[in-house]
Image (tube, rainbow over all chains, first blue to last red; front, side, top):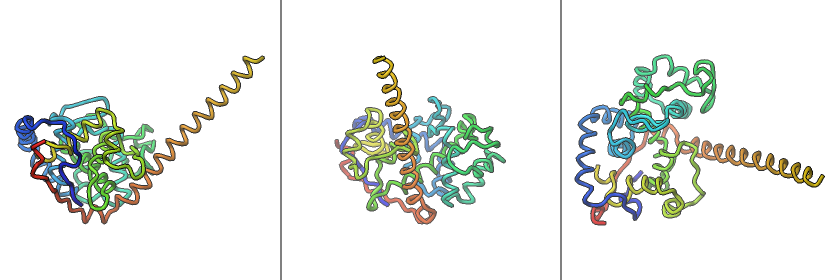
Length: 215
Length: 61
């Protein structure tokens, strides 16, 4: 699959922003580069995409909290378990990923893997439908792992004729797994019908002077 | 009397609307899940290779 940049003929950042953005990206790599490289290898998600999403979502602040969205990749702690459940159900969760999840979740990983469907309210998650806490997702390695696994699902789900639909990828990352797009919608149509916030997300990641191109 | 009939019709339409809305949400979610079940397969992850093509004019806009 191929990521084409610029993907859309829009710009969020000015050319003069690129130097500052490059410095911020370098800072993210300096702080979390070893973790990101390992997770990129085990999830098979490009390191550049992970770094770019960290930049866009939190600016590299591992304590960033916005409502339910937590940490470096602004992972929703209510849906983190659903991502892991789905990846495992699809037989995509590898041993290295399971080992890393076990390191942070211990026996709670078994609870996530025993769900029958997303949001399953069972005894081991106290009938809440989720097992992760805010505190879990403030841990950079766990946060990046779950964000990267989610990105991997979206890469496979939104590659059309070999080209990654970055518009769909970034909107679904931001708005949730069950975000639906009109059948056959072009990137221009999706951009035109998106909210200002969503347009900014698309342009930040994949427009001219984008973070993904800078990274 | 007229007011009561109007109220009953209003309530019935409201309930039907809520049911239709719930069913639309449910069908939309099922459709997204079915699509992901088909696309996010183990072999796709295993064989995933991502290449980047960056237009050299990227910085000029």
